[in-house]
Amino acid sequence: MPTRNATIEEAADKIHSAAIHLLRYAAKEDAAAGIGPARLSALSVVVFAGPLTLGELAAAEGVRAPTTSRIVSGLEDAGLVRRVADAADRRSVRVAATTKGTRLLQRARRRRIDALVRLLGGLDAGDVAVVAAAAELVEAALRTAASGRGA
Image 1 (cartoon, rainbow, N blue to C red):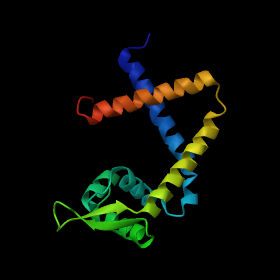
Image 2 (image 1 turned 45 degrees about the vertical axis):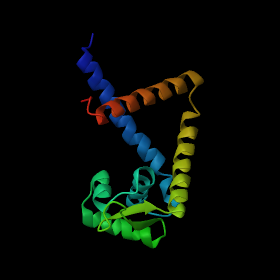
Image 3 (image 1 turned 30 degrees about the vertical axis):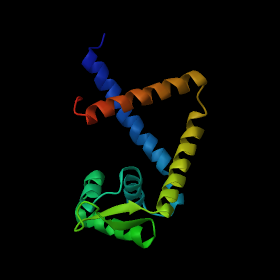
């Protein structure tokens, strides 16, 4: 019988592999958004966590500030984000999504979800419930880790 750590290791390996394949599967829908993956990713962060400074966005995306600045300029040129003065520090600017940017992101997210609905549609109801429960457990573990109580 495997030890608890071996079982956790196996589960982690399966989640890792499934997550990569699942994201690649869903990302096939992103071309319809009409902007590249880096811009779509940054727009997603701004829509869900913004308004953010360029530094905060760079940290969230795991890229350097000059890269973020180029991405934001492209999003700004497309009318998807705008730079706004920080209310607390007028010397600082924040990147905020425009209505157009929010709508584009919502449509892109809907296409990804629809693709996953089609994928999961081949499972029976019991298996769908297991997938939903597993997703909830993974999200709970992530919340615990983010709060500093986890690994």
